[in-house]
Length: 339
Ligand code: ATP
Ligand code: MG
Ligand code: FE
Image (cartoon, rainbow, N blue to C red):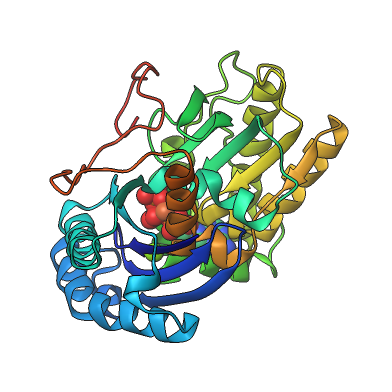
C-alpha cells in the first residue's frame, strides 16, 4: 500500500509517501520561518500564500524521491484541520485534485490524529491502548488512544498550549522565532532553580493544564535574571507541570501499557527525559517519535491516512476544511479558549 500525505495546517508545507508496512519512501518539507520572522509569529495570510507556492513542487519532489508515479499511489491523505483555515484549504484542495486526477480515494486527516498515531509509524511494537501526551504549538492534551479514530480525552489546557508558552517566552527573552528550540538551546547554560516560577494546576485532581500564569510570571521576571537562567527555570516549570499532570492521568489510563509523547514540544530533550523517567517509575514503556516526526511533517499525515485507509475510512471530494476539529468530540469544553 502506497499513501501520499500532504500537510499545510500551520507554517510547514510538506508532502510524503509512506507504505502500509511503515517505510517512509519520501518526505519533502518546506518551512516558512524566514517569511514570519519579522512578525515574531505565524501570519495566516502569508502562510497560506507560501503553501500555494511550494506544495506542487513538493509533491513532485516526493514522487521523484520515492521513485513512484501518481498512478502507483493507493490513496491521497491530506490534513483537513484543525489549523489556520487558509493553509488547511491549500493542502486539502491539492489533495482532492490529485485524488481526482489519479482516480484514487481521498483520506481527510485530522492533524492531531497525525501527531497521535506518529509513534505507531516509528515503533511497530507499540500496542493499543496507550496514554498519549500531545504537546504542540496549539494543543496540550492527555488522550487514551484506543484505536484508529478512537481517542478518549482525559485532560486539556484551560488556556495556552505548552508550545505557545515556549514561543511567548522566547519572544519575551528576545530569542526570536520559532521559540521552542531557541529556549531549549539557551536553557542549557542556565540554572533551572535560579528563578522561582509557578507550576499552575499541579496537585489538582483533574489532570488539566494551564500555562498562562507561567507566561505572565516569566514576563514579570524579565530583567531580574539572565536569559539563560530564565529559560532554564521556565523549561523546568513546564517539565514539572507536564510530569505532574501526566502522572495524575496514568491512574486513569485503563489498560495502557505505554506512555507516549508526540507533537512539537516532544522534540524537547528535558521533556523527553522527564517523561521517560515517569513512565519507567510506573512500569510503562516510553515511546517518543524521532525529532523530525515530532514537529509538523507529512509522513505522520500519510501514516494516519494509511491507518484510516486500511480500516476502510475514505472521504468524499466535497469534504470541508475545518479550523476546529476535536479528536474526542464527546469531551466536554473546559473553561478558557482553545479547548
Ligand atoms: P498543532 O499541532 O497543535 O496544530 P503546530 O502544528 O503549530 O500546532 P507543532 O509543529 O506540532 O505545532 O509544534 C510546534 C511547537 O513545538 C511550537 O510551539 C514550538 O515552539 C514547539 N517546539 C518545537 N521544538 C521544540 C523544542 N525543542 N522545545 C520546546 N518546544 C519546541
Ligand atoms: Mg511550525
Ligand atoms: Fe502540529
